[in-house]
Amino acid sequence: MTHGTSRRRWHPLTIAAGLVLAAGGMTGALLLARPGWLLPGAWLVLCAAAGFATSGSS
Amino acid sequence: MLSSPVWRGTPTLAFCAGLVCGGALTATVLVVAGSLLRAPLPDFVRWAVVAAALGAVLLREAGVWSFRLPENRRLVPDTVFRLGRHLGPLQFGLEMGTGARTYLPSGLPYVAAVAVALTASVPAALCAGAGFGIGRALMTTANLRYGADNAWDGEWRAHGRELGFLTGAAFVVPLAAIAVTVSSGTP
Image 1 (cartoon, rainbow over the protein chains, first blue to last red):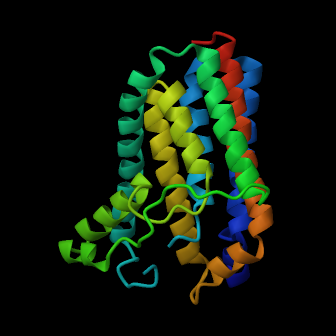
Image 2 (image 1 turned 90 degrees about the vertical axis):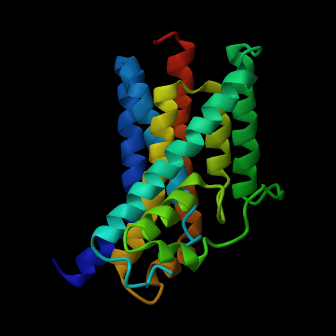
């Protein structure tokens, strides 16, 4: 893996886009199939976004 | 602090475990305290409070409304590393994962706290807490792997607006889906 590829992979925009994709997938599954057991997963994704949004404090 | 040689190998795992445990600890406290608050409130009132908190924080993040949120304006002290190669990072992660022991630059965790306290079941609250820790672990892991010299922090500052939009979307969309799913009576 090149240095440039590694930097792109760990770029904050790449991570944030991954969170958006996870949130979209979870939301689609919740709204289309409505399985109650997916609710904790949705909480996990939204709070991961909240945790990542606190970046800059380190 | 992230440039310290302690951030290599298994101490990093201890730090990430601490973040997840810290988040779960805060969520447990919130859901216990919230169970007392939510008892007299009907569902729609609880979700209305969450929506009001979300609206206020989104206005703040957009720079439309300026107000201060309570936060512990300090860094976790270096002295935690006296505990050893693994216990030090574990305690550092635990303190950072609680969200109550150091800076909290975004308003989204406050909305998450209100939502967990007023609407989450115990398993959902534990997942929410773990998710918060995972989000903070993503931040530190990406920061370390991106490169030295605070380049990652520079990228964060350079793309702050886009990142605020993306993290806001990743937060609001599942929260809305949870509200719809719960309101429609899905167990």
